Amino acid sequence: MTRFLFVVIISLMSMVATAKSIVVLGDSISAGYGIEVTQGWVSLLQKKLNENGSDHIIHNESISGDTTAGGLARIDQALSLYKPDVVIIELGANDGLRGLPPALIKSNLAELIHRAQDAGAKVLLLAMKIPPNYGSRYIALFYTIYPQLAKELRVPYVPFIMEDIALTKDMMQADGLHPNANGQPFITQKVWPQLLPLLK
Image 1 (cartoon, rainbow, N blue to C red):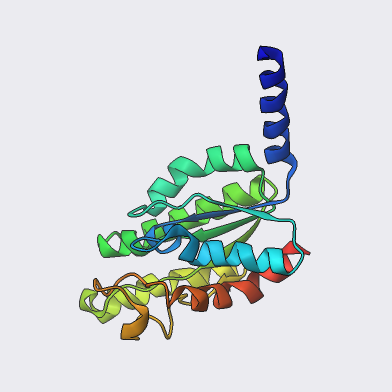
Image 2 (cartoon, rainbow, N blue to C red):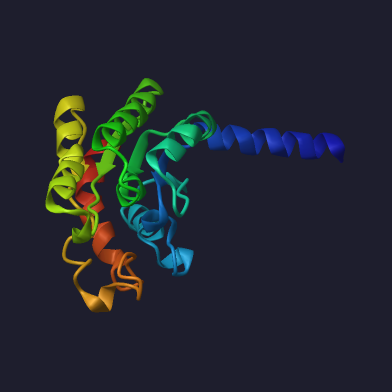
């Protein structure tokens, strides 16, 4: 019995290592904060992949409250475990909410992209924005991080993934920061057309 279990475990580990996979490295927006996990945009993206005949498996490595520094602390393990074909990075918003220097946020995101690429993965960067009370200058410096990195490192990116959602009351939770179940499909729809070319 012990030998049988050992063989099963090794087989499962082999399947994880060889399956076509996508890793989502994000924060609460991708972790499905405040809603059922199955209602989140990541789960909906997996469903869309299945419906379109893709055999890619999404591994959601998102943690509520995570920062770019947190992502750096975790990405190597995820890359080693899943050996992803694609890494979707949705981080930076919590850095911005803490008022961290945009240059630091950009540097951390760049390092995340480099590590994913060095591991043989393609990268899709998801852009975020922060509330207007942080001041127009900081907000502008923060948001331009994403298109700058996309251009400099030649990676595709999705402009603010909560555009048309963040200001729609019926799509947001009471905190005004997180989309509810109604808003999740719209995020999936924004990510899908940018992800599809990376799977070919």
